[in-house]
Each structure stands twice: as structure tokens, then as C-alpha cells.
Image (cartoon, rainbow over the protein chains, first blue to last red):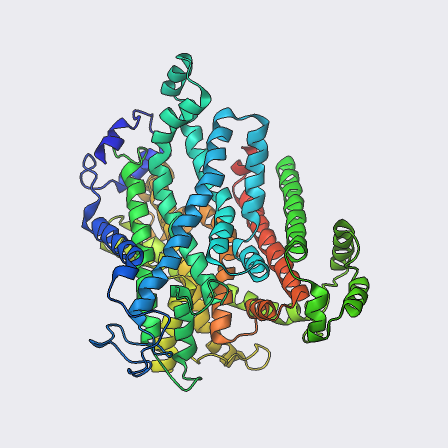
Length: 307
Length: 315
């Protein structure tokens, strides 16, 4: 990973703001470290991804069918490690299968956003002109539209299928990714090495793919991870409002909703575990994505290199 | 300055036009026939045709849009199919709840973020700064739908400090019990704003405190407190102010979650109920009103921003 930071062009004059940032400089500016916490977070994301992908191979009870020989709303025990919910279903199994929804929507939505927003952004920022002006204004207009409201309206009329939610969130995420990619492409488009490539007769696509893309990649990846976290929150909110994947398919958001419905005992039952476990899993996943994205951003950020 | 504001106003009108078109077409381009929804099991092809004619659903779409938007400008957002209440009255009953939630949450966020940032920026990277940095970072991973059920579990179910769901009391009925029911959801909503405000203010204060005029004030022998309040705070609050519009707009998702969880009859609660009952005029009306409100809030804070910092308009 360090080889990437070496290929980063440096030597830009430091502006006033950056000089001020020196005040915050860490103890040893020449050695940037990602730290243990970063790797713990990477580990948690990896664990969630692996469990979700290989859920079928794991010795887990069916997440949608209850175990009626066990009490409902049971606490953690050897029989059911995280207990059972009000329909006698295994909470651990539902958590692991539910992770699939968050991960598919999160990474799928971010990927769709990158394709729809990122690629036009690179061409737009590199070629400038009228198309750039139109796309730029268009992205402002689309960003002004509150995503959750639009999502609720679209999902309620179109349906709750997983692929539909992923697609809609990806489309609404595109203008934000457009802005990020456009800004970072702009900062490289006029560099000398781009000019040199142009002088050698390289085509626009080649310059974008070979000269600019490798340079903006770190920014895109770190913002991409934070975008994944944002999308997971959006899906979780939808699920909590009962507008994401339909039951009995588990997702962390609808598990939290089921748990919070039982909280007050209005249904004659209570099950705090059905709140604690999904909330904890979601918290750890979100904080891991944020930490990894944030650390990578400062790790790759040349302008924050301390004197 | 004038040209900049005119430009922003033009953009605002374009955005509101798109929002209204989107709110209209969301309902009309997607599958499902409103007439069938209204008539329910009694729908026959004859009475569907009659309802279509009464509602103007047989006209071309652009014509329907202009009829609809004409009604909107007269304050007529249609009528609920289920309760026969007008959408305008549903909105005017529930909107105050959202406004109250947002105002309370912002008061809590400011009350915590300002002192924290002022204290942290005095000694950057020292214990208090690092502790508050990592605490607020954790708040980023606590969106309302995660933290609200947990707080209800702890404070309403276990300790009975706050009332549980379905205990909302209108402000006009009993002031103190209203505040009591509003506190928990407002804290939930405040968490997200605290992160944004704390980080922006802390970073700006740290760079302002390096400026020459602060050194000048120090050398004149002014106390730290006076320097902070009189000299550093104002120039450092600009980006915080600029972010307030977007932050408040982002609270909408959270208000929906706490309203549904605590059964408070705000806009989000009404919207989700109407969605579940296929009550499309109400969905359309609330979508339009909330979207326009968010756009206007963003515009308003943008506008304040240019007044506080005229350099923006010159760019």
C-alpha cells in the first residue's frame, strides 16, 4: 500500500490553511501509520462479509423457521447462542443472513453510484465545456432532492425487492459520487504528467484510465467506504420504517424494528436481546467502515502531509 | 452580491419545479390505478371510469400536472381516501411536532458541541480533545434507528426516566409533559448533529487561534476566555453555519424513525401510515411539502452564509 503513496505527486506549495494544519501535526510526521484499531476494523468488516457470504455452509438453523422445541424470546444459551425471537427463530442465524441485505445494498448501491456518477464525472471534469456545466448544475439539483423522501415514495409504489432498493439508492447516490470524483479529477487534470501524456499523443480515455484514475483511486476508495456506511444507514432506516425487504427475510433494520415493537411489552412479551444484538452489530459495522474510510483518507492525503 | 443571489434564486425555482414534477410523476408513472384503490373491492369497469373522469385521471399527464400544481398554489393538496381529512389539515396538524423535534435537537446539539469544541481547541491533541474526538466519531455509527430503540430500552423500559411509546402530549395541552416526551427523541436526533458541529467548530477554532490577530490580543494581555468569546468564536462559526442547512435537512430521516418508534403523530408517522394504506394523495402531498421545506432550509442557510461571509458570493 505504501507504493501508492510514493507514486503520489508531491511538492505542491503549501497554502495558508495547510500551514495552519501543521499545528495539529502528529508526533512523527514522516511515518504515517494505520494503527491497530484500523486493522481491528478491517477484521470486523472481513468477518461480517465472510459470514454473510458463506452463511449457507455454516451450521446455522434456518433463519426464517422457528425452533418450537425452544422457548420464544429466550436469552443467549448454548442451544441458541444469541437467543431466539418472538417467532422462535434463531437470532444469530437471522443476524448473519440479515448482514447480506446490508452488504448487498451498501456495496451494490455504492458500485452503481460509482458507475453512474464516477465515470461521467471523470470525462466531465477532464473535458470541461458546456457538458460539464450542465452535469454540474444537474448534480446540484439532484442533491437538493431529499433522498429518503424520494426513496419512501418510490419504494412504496414500486415495491420492496432487494435489487430495486439497491438500484434506487445507487441512482440517488450518483450525484454525490459525481461531485467527489469530479473535484478530485479536476485537481489532477492540469498536472504536468497529464500534459506530458497528451503531448505524447495519448487519447482522452487512455489519459483518464492510466494517468488520472490511479491518482484519484485512494480518494474514491476512502470516500466509497464512507458512502457504503451512509447507504447501509439509509437501508436500515427504510427497513425500520417497514419499507425494505419484506418479512420473513431478515435485515438488521427490520430486526431492530421487531425488537423495538416488543420493548414496551405492549404485545405481552419483551425481548431486549432483539434490540441489543442487531444494534450492536450495526454499530460495529458502521464504525468500522467509518474508521477504515477515514484512516485511508488521511493516509493517502498528500495535502495533509505535515512539514 | 445581487447577481449571486439572483443566480441562487433561479436555481431554487428550478429545483422546486423538479421536486414538484418528481412528486407528481412518482405517483402517476408507477403501476397501480388510484381509482381501483379508492373503490377497493367495489371496483367495476363502469365506476372506475366514473372516478377516473371525476379525478381528471383520463386527461393527458401534463394537463393533470398543471391542474394539480394549480391546486397546490391554492393550498389544496387533495383529500385522504381513508379518513377524508384534507391533506393540508393532516400536514398542519403534524408539522409542528417535527419542527419542535428539530428545534430541541439543535438546541441540545449546540449546547454540547460549542463548549466541547471551545475546550478541545485550546489544547489540540491533548486528552480532552482526543476523548471528545473519538466519542463524537462513535456517534457517526449511531444513526437514529440504532440508538433510539437502545435508549428507549434503557431509559424508558428499565429506568422509567422518560415515558415510553404512545405517550405524546401536545405542547398546548401540557407544557412540561410535552417537554418530557420530547427529550428522548431530541437527544437521539442531536447525536448526529453534535458530530458535525463539534468537528467543524473545533477545526476552525484551532486555525483561528493561530491567526496573528489572536497573538496580538494575547500580547495585549487579554484573558483566554475573552479571546475565545470576543475574537475567535465568530470567525470560526462560519462553516458550522453553512453546514446547518444540510444537517437539519438530514434530520428528517431521524424524525421519521423516532415518530414511528414512539408513536408521535408527526409528518413521518403520517407518511408511513399513508404509504401502508396506499393513500396516494397524502403521500404525494407530504412528499412535496417535506421536499420543498428541505430545499428552502438549505437555501436559507446558504443565504445567511453569504451575508456572514461575503467572499462566497464573489467566487
